[in-house]
Length: 453
Image (cartoon, rainbow, N blue to C red):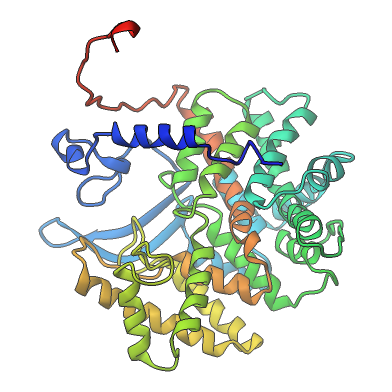
């Protein structure tokens, strides 16, 4: 029996061809009509659409004449340099994600007592409604874990007696619950996929109330529940670096747009998940890993000349997925460096030594060095190019034995903290629906009666 929901019939194909033939918008028309496609100007700068205190990205400085010049990237959470935040909890040899969530939500660092209380609140919320895992996850397995995560978030609406209340206290309650629940939703969704679609054994582990979010993620994911301290600390660090990245990234802007309509928290977060799923956003680290797998299968990674040739073929749309992209290289804002990538690079090296993956790390380093040089040679670029956070995060997750199906969900497990902060900020400060304008370029035509067509 044919699956009518998946089949592209001859009629649908014919109408798709008709739609394509009637699309007359050409790339040069954006310049002609002075429209910033993708909300970025001709120099690649983002069009400012709002104000935020949640985070800031610095990728430029001023020269003596006041002109913008690229500089090494910096990322600030609520005014605090992320590098300083990371150094702080690493110096104390403790986990940092929960502290980061507190900072993003409340715009200040907690003291020791406040942090312990906050961890206790998150731990108390780390549970799902009765039979939710059975009815919403195990009974409806799927191949895409981001879709399962989004579906689960929407389903939680039905269990909330105050789902539509958008007062700050109620939205904060909902956000804290989702920050606590996301690791469970992601891992349980994977276990369902693994069992029902891959035919593997099913095991569901409950979270440990004494453990951090990163520890619980690894503990619930692995059959034995075991992990090393280094593994948990590195995953925690990755979550800190993925927790927030300004109001202009696609999924966070989606959160602002949907929140501005006055809708509920579950709908807003689900919309953000749909944005993050895309390979141009949260799915990029999966592409990085698969790109390197293809590279190793087709060249000798010991020979720099072959690496260079492969990178050239990537740009010429003659290698991997033929898109002309070197996944993990370049960023819409950063130029000389992405501070998240710099921090993750250090951790990736430590983990590579523990896991015996030094050769893989060395290959990544060679590509990170060669790619900017080759891109500048072959393409006209308005700013520098460097490795971004996705370049190393996929390698780290792979070395942590996390399946690639969970790479983007991990991003969501962390970024829901930033989405929550931005949702609350949107409710607090704007109160007006975000409604951008589009320029219509279709000429007026006369209506023709059906009998005369």
